[in-house]
Image (cartoon, rainbow over all chains, first blue to last red):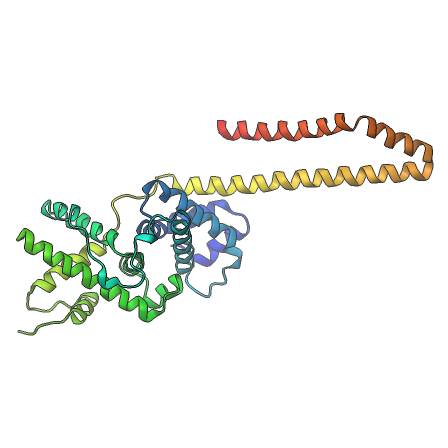
Length: 185
Length: 131
């Protein structure tokens, strides 16, 4: 059983074995968050390492006012967003004003659908969504954070989190429906 | 047969309460919710945690080395000022002889000091690369 308080207190005393335990415990959470925001696979490992280095550096400022996972997810989210801003490669392709104009590209996903690899097909569709949508979908469904916790992590108001979640799922559902019809599966 | 809207369907799927009626919307949503629960196929390397620990320890030891050099420089500076002050009090002639000697060998002293730091730096780089 992972005891947050005991592990944090051990790390603050300089115990690196406890820090390794913490990394093992949260590496999947960090990877999921970073993976949805940063698309360059070669940057992923470095960014995740950077997240944990930041966690180690600022652990003494963590006051247990939120869950440790929420705090680490926030560091992961901000690190990934800063990385993308720094290299200006992904956020630019997003739709800051009118998500109504958003449309999926029509090449790769259908091929995957015909191969019946539904999960890979849907992941391809998610990867095409604006970053705000990708983030809330991942934090909510994969990391199982509540909307209030997602607000804490991303800084988006809870109402926006809920509406992004709803719209993202609706857009994906409509695309899946169209593709299912086209493929008559 | 009731026509569920998107909001209702999403809420029911979140709560795990599936409506009895089938429909295209429900079918698509079911596929979607199932896929959303699955993580990406790829992941981090197996020794990720060990690599992070090594990087944190590396940073800490670099910090220690910088602290050590700063401390050494501080001690040398304080000791030099101390020795010079003592010389000034005991024998002013000896003090001026000392400053003149240092001034005439200043480039040799600078070279010696820079060499020590360069050797230490190169040594650390080589050791790091070989590790």
